[in-house]
Image 1 (cartoon, helix red, strand yellow):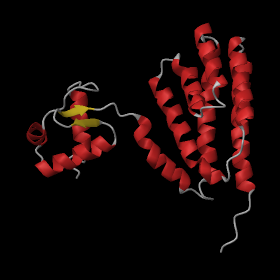
Image 2 (image 1 turned 60 degrees about the vertical axis):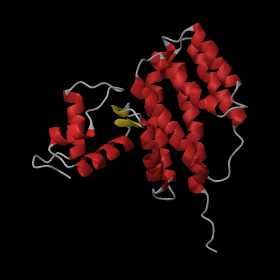
Image 3 (image 1 turned 180 degrees about the vertical axis):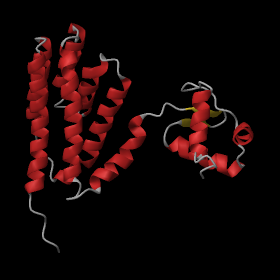
Length: 229
């Protein structure tokens, strides 16, 4: 419920966290302390804490208390997946938009990666590509490892979020296609460009990777809808 200044109790708790400089993992004021500090009832405080817990802003450890959370973007996966599924045309257009945003992010960063990837990281990327025919998670790990050297935690969380949502919504594209060999070729092309420290080749390899994904979405868009039964 908003207060007189227009701020909700959730927002005031978040402000309190920032004002006190509480880092993720730090203990929160107790329920009674929050009631006194914010002039709110027990039920209102509990409701606000539950809402913040759902967002990952606070974490409740039973038997230990309430702590500041890490607010991982993982909590957005269900709502973003719902938005994509609920979009026009069964969500296929929204899925295309999601992939397009991820493409812009990755092609923008891959040039930086091309100038800084170490031989050790290249070997690890090769190993992940070699495992893609056995483990789908190797694809996710590949993209995470690509940008780890950027030192940008938000980038890693966004790429993970987009990957998870795409694969959760992927069944809306229709029957699965056997594309393992093509996926492996695309990723080998990316690694080869990185090994050559060729910024433009790395960007083009990443564009080709996403062009393949968007082509599958386009095929699903053109597919006629099933006749009503």
